[in-house]
Amino acid sequence: MAPKAPRFSRFGRRAEGQRGRGIYLLPNAFTTGALFCGFYAIVMAMNQRFDYACWAIFVAMILDGLDGRIARLTNTQSEFGAQYDSLSDMVSFGAAPALVIYEYSLRGLGKLGWIAAFVYCAGAALRLARFNTNIEVVDKRYFQGLPSPSAAALVVGFILMMTDPDIDVSARQVDWLSWTIALFAGLTMVTNVPFYSFKDVNFKKSVPFIVVFLIALIFALVAIKPAVVLWPLFVLYGLSGYVVLFWRMAKGKPVSIIQTEDEPSDPSERR
Image (spheres, rainbow, N blue to C red):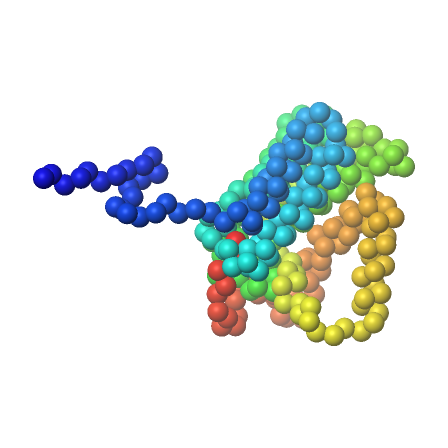
């Protein structure tokens, strides 16, 4: 009797009796939600609804911060989740902010406008690719370059503030400022400037009472006027990496983003 021919699928050869591999639903559902928000932001920008587009990207930031943590809590990390998360980030924090700011104020600048939007988009792509390849050697206390979600918040936070009804400013009045912000965010993502990652913060450790009060104060300020308060906060973070870099250089101790201590690698960081 002739042996049975091996079974194939369009994804490649599968061994006899081997079950197909599935994907984890819960963390990837959050990643899909972030991807949807990025796509929705693009659609809203094309329809000149920039406030909706900006808020959609902020929601994508929240979902992007949750998917990895949920994967670690439920022990559902996977290489598929890590790659899917990077692709979602490219849409939500790379292509979407670039198109939103182009449609808002860069279109009137002609070639210089779309070049600035492309620099931002390319910077996000390079930033994500470098993060995936350097994750095992970079000091976990710092990000190598401005994180793409923070860069997106820097771009769309400015647009959200300019579209606030209490601020009577047209897109044509801030086109060059938008151009500068897009270039700054795009180039800062691919620099080696260290940005604090907050990954070494111990939330189980006791803190002075004033710290809790300051956190409550920040939440109150954001709740009063989120469109106006959010952008300055991300501007401070966008400048903080340069402040740390120059301060350490002045002290003769440049910040090293390369791992200097032997630490066990955590594959869950790449969810």
